[in-house]
Each structure stands twice: as structure tokens, then as C-alpha cells.
Image (cartoon, rainbow, N blue to C red):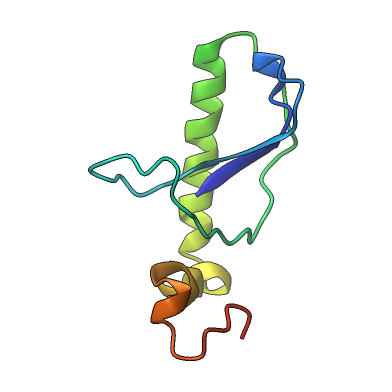
Length: 98
């Protein structure tokens, strides 16, 4: 996942938002559902872009950086984390922070 946290200057947002872009392709949308995320790194500061195409190209570049990072031993464990793959009710100890 790559994520924008901020005001998204290209769209002139007036409210701070958190917009995750999931790397996995899903068959259907799940708007309105709860989503657990793990923020494990930082790629770049927020920026404005001259066009929507330039913004999209940068997001794809961010995705490539994130995918390469997830292959590093430091981050590889997050791919199969039970905290991200199961609901809290499915976990034996119900503790998301252990």
C-alpha cells in the first residue's frame, strides 16, 4: 500500500485526508468497510503536479518503491501479518498490538 496523508494540493483539498492505494487488486470495492493499515515507511513529501497524468505517474513510481521495500527483510513480515490478514475477532488473544 502507498498512502497520501495531507491536503492533496493537486485537488485543492481544504481538509486533511488519508488516502491509501492498495497494491493488491481486488475483484470488488469495499467502500464503507473497516480497513487496518500498517505504515512502515516514508517515500516522499506531498507535492503539487502540473497534470493529473503526472500525479498518476508519480503514484505508480511510489508503488514500485513500496513493492521493492516489501521485499526487504526489514519489511517482509508485514506481508503475512495476522494483524492485517484476520479480523480482531478471529485472533486468539484479541490484542492488535502484541
